[in-house]
Image (cartoon, rainbow, N blue to C red):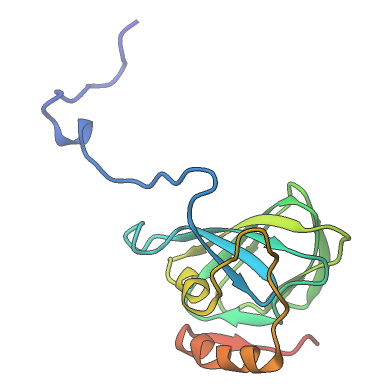
Length: 172
């Protein structure tokens, strides 16, 4: 059976065009931020601004305060564990295999309400905010877990969040 569409000649640059991103398991830029571990797999620089992509491991009780992004949408896919999600005015539980999309300017937060680490993938579109984790997180120490942060560390994040057009919002 022949291909039902015209096939470009192999001299067409689409045959050999380079680009794209491939990050192997265990690779990426890992950072500890407020007790959580974030591994950035792709940045806006890697994707021509299209997206930022990361993996998160959040211990029981972990997760950020309620906030809203002004520059990007955010999407989450839970691999393992249990998260309580605040999305706008709704609060609900997310379990393995669940997906959550958060449009920009929408209040949200997640909190690990389970008794084991929650692991999920998340993405920003367009990319850019993933750089916040790289710039403000701590480089992990092999064999150790992320220590809890003191209030001064959280206070130091405010300027970084404002620069990224992120607004901290009340829970209720």
